[in-house]
Length: 406
Image 1 (tube, one colour):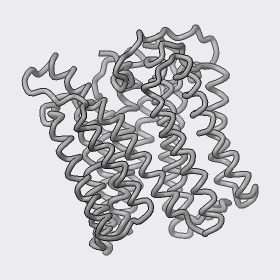
Image 2: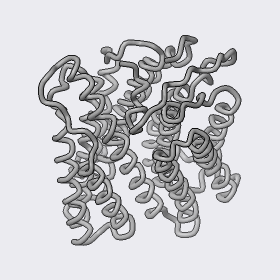
Image 3: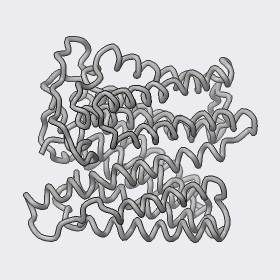
Image 4: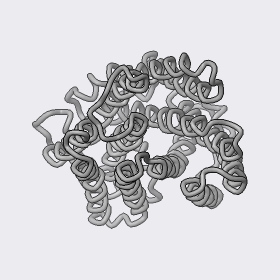
């Protein structure tokens, strides 16, 4: 099975996968997943490695953001948009039947992303408004490119992707404004997290049961996952309303109650996907493990709303576990499939998954066990950086090598 279906399974009706144009320039610009997966992974590792000395006051960045806000922003609106863009640019041609973005147009997006990272890092010198404009230009260009391709291919069903990208862009703009005028970006942080969780619920909620079904039919006949249906849509819709309430009012009995219900609903949803039958295929299993942190995040955030645990426990379950593991799962699968390799998790790939699992376990434990917080934060940061550098080292040669795209 080609990992072209990593994306196409999210579309109810799919046109034949287009062939890539002949590309004589840099191989890394021959497909959107190549630069954004590689550079996004390297940035994720380096940014977290820098975070601990910044957190302890051993390193000072020339950013207008408070140290915590810089860390959150660069994970939420720096690393994740890069991976999402690589994912989207690979998906959209399968939905629309049009040729993918390559060469100079792709280079413009890559440079816009890099410019955003630099503008935020040096915003104390360049000014917060300049940083906002430069940083927001990347997601603006991505949303416009996605809208153009979807409209040209008349694939109106997937305009929700543009809507979510636009919401992520709005969250980023709100983050900059809030950080400047209020000194902190709490609403901008929660808004961005909410959009990311909805993206995982929608896209992860389609590809995980779809890939699992395909593999089980071929390799392990028996109980199959339930396909995406009205129950899934109802759970996603309820989650959207729940997250909206959480963004506006993160603490309180009403918020805690609906977060608790959403967590249980996502556990029910996950249980319908036959993940226990995928132990032999680590590329599949990791999708189920990554999605597990969506309900865990809801449940821990519900506890935080009731004042039982620190809010960072649920937030990091969502972001380090849900977003971190799911992005690694998709990056490894797509990188293998779209470069014509066997869809099999090598030992280094499995080590990457294990490091990410250690990272989220240690980070959530740091929020739940304050006495061990500092030690656990170091373990989490080291494991996270090892996971993403491990991806870059293992898959970098493949992403940079010239070969027949699939």
